[in-house]
Image 1 (cartoon, rainbow, N blue to C red):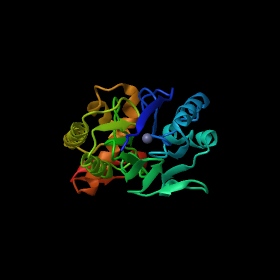
Image 2: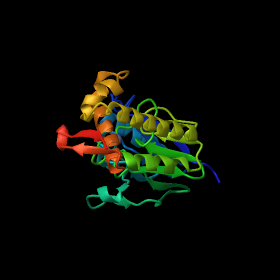
Image 3: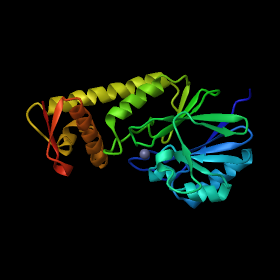
Length: 265
Ligand SMILES: [Zn+2]
C-alpha cells in the first residue's frame, strides 16, 4: 500500500507556550486531513488550504484539543476547504461538528488515521495515529522544545502520565508534535517525560518537608533555571502535581482557590 505524505505548515504565533508557533499538519495520499488548523490568522489558513487542496479534497479538519492556538482557525479553514470539523465528542458543541471517540477511524481517500484519547494536557485531547506510516500526531500531549503545561482542573497530571504510558505502547517510529520539530525516538522521549515528572514530584515532596506552601511559592526554587515568563504556567503544573499527590494520599490540601496550600501527610 502506498504511504500518505505529511506536510507541515507552521503558524506565525511564537510564544512561551507555543514555541516556534503552532504546527498545522496535512496528511494524505489522494485526499487529505488537516490536523490542528492553528490560530485565526488569514494568511496561515490560506496557506494551509492551498497546500492541502493541492493534494486533493480535504476529507476532515481535526483538532487535537480545544485550546485556541490549535482550534481558533477551524471554522475559517472549514469555509476555505469545504471540509467538516471533527473534535472530541465532549467539545463537539454545535451542529455540523463531527464528534470523535477513542479508537474512531478517520478516512481520507486511501489513507486512514485512528483517534487516540489522551487526556492530561486537556480533557478532550486526542492524538492521531497513522498505523501504516507508523506516525503519531501528538498535539500538545508530547512537544519538542517546550513542555506541556498541565492546567487544572481541565488538565490532570494523573491522566497525563497514564496517557504518556499509553502512547509509549503504540507502534510508531515518529512523533509529530503540535509545536516544535518531529521526534524520532518516541520510546526514549516518553521515558524522559515520565522520568521528568517523577523527578519533579520528588522535588515537590522535598520542598514541602519544612512545612505547607502554595504551588506559586515553590516555583522560584523548582524552576530556578527557567525564564520568569513561564513561572505562571509552571505554578499551574506544580498545582497539578500537588492535586495528583493529594489524590494518592501523599499530600493534604489546606484551603482552596489561589490560596490553596499543600502539606505532607
Ligand atoms: Zn494546548
